[in-house]
Image (cartoon, rainbow, N blue to C red; front, side):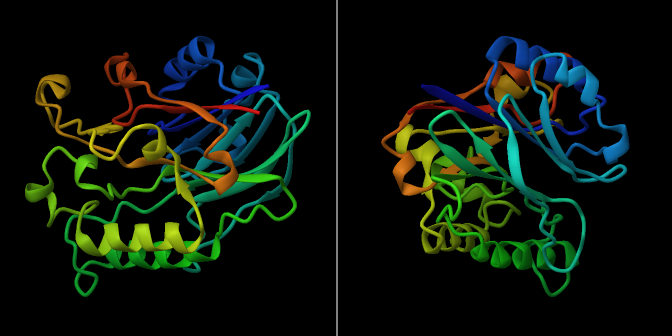
Length: 267
């Protein structure tokens, strides 16, 4: 069977519900993981999304900030909402998706952005980000009670030189500083996660999933970063058939500054 999962930092699910609906109608992923939903649980647009075939929805949200949600066509079981750094700011949700002949543990993450100054001594937001990444080492790829595992979301780090528009100019900019990129790669490797986007798209090629709102013409300037990621347990590498960055979504009406990433598997 074919199985597809999408990850998307939507930057307010209620404000951008129309483009979420557009995306689901066009792409019809089996699972959609949203980040930065900015929505309390009791105000999440469950009815509108269930009408599109996503009967199984788990949410971890709060008013105005952060928040993650996982929408699925298949049942979701063993749901967890983990607190990192002893701060319950709704940045993680994981659940097992039960497919007809396979189960997947899916982690949905929204890593702190880290503010503007890449110095934890003077910037508490950056210190929080590094602490959060350090605690992610406790989320390994071994699936446990599931057959396989996926980790997706806005990790707010562009680890490779080809994950940013200019490696040299962004070395001191939060999201691409050496301490962030090295920490992310170290935790990925220690957790035995595979960067599935880079197994399908060679590291020599640029990949961007985010373009700033500050650019007058984001497409012409193309100053992007790959902040959104799809990782998997090792067994999923051979099952992966496609990775698509839905770049056109950046030009939709009232867009997020991130675009969806869709991973497709042949099981």
